[in-house]
Image 1: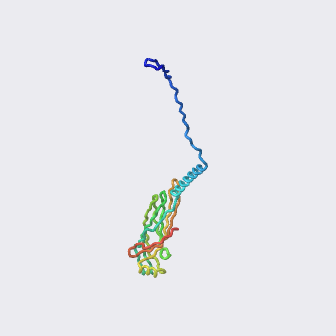
Image 2: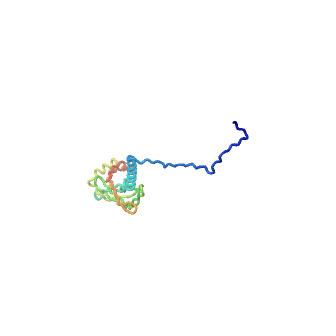
Image 3: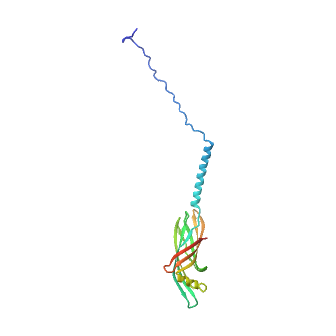
Length: 212
């Protein structure tokens, strides 16, 4: 039979609290490290530690200062023949002291000796000073020599004066200490040079230096 619009249709009511849905959270999966991964991690840690140690030794290791004869000026030269053959000389020297370390350098004195053809003519010492970290300092000194006997070297000296270039031997030495935190580390530097000085313009034409 066909239903009409007057027919009654019964519906069941909805439950007051519908059943809640259950949600399951799965933990993030971390695969266990393999032996190869462990070895690679150990290698990276060891390489990093070795690099940091090498950098620390490079920056903190105390190196000796370097010294260089920057200028040697022949102020005066005079040959005396009144009481035998003697020579009066006057030198002006400028020595460059370079501190390559990360800490300041304090030196007590700087000693320079000047010679001619293997014979020492004179010796001069300057006062101490301080050189900052990775910096350079220039030290000036004057050496006056009067009444030098040049009997054995007079012919060589006259020949060098005629050429306008005189070869001198210099030996420079500096002694000091490096302030390394609470420690004082003694340092020393020494260099020997063969210096050719132009007597016309009082400049260094050429020099050969040998650190010792």
